[in-house]
Image (cartoon, rainbow, N blue to C red):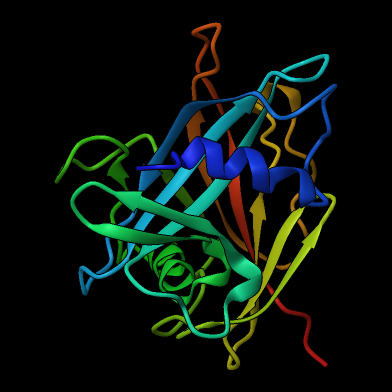
Length: 217
């Protein structure tokens, strides 16, 4: 792809409130991730980890991405950029928190209806990606679309569903388990853990997403 995914992300990251600024432009390396499949086979989905070495210490970011062959309606705020694929042509690359297909499949993963796939191998499940469900998890068939997306210093919150409603917190700056992932919010329905491998070769594991019930009124 031209520009590459990493080149697109290096231009996009500094504008996000959860990005930890380094001493210059981001210096990114792909260091992990996994995929989910679109049941309709139309949208590519990747949960990429990139590590930025531009600051005093490396920071690894979790970046859910979708790849489409046409613009996604009403998702301009989530567009990262376009890239030319040698076979598929122009691809529109989105922050997956704005894409209803990715959000629905991430909920399906918590429900046991989706299987995480290896990042770089076709038809190969990735058993290192583990959803941890509290109680019944998110009931029903799952949301059809994200309702609201909010970026903050701690990550991205996606309000999903209407009956019941829930909040999907996508963790951005990853924290290894041994350093502590912080307390789980009240009403946690589940959380998702996965590994990544920074340049020193060490494998880390941490929380990639947390699903919580929206407070009742």
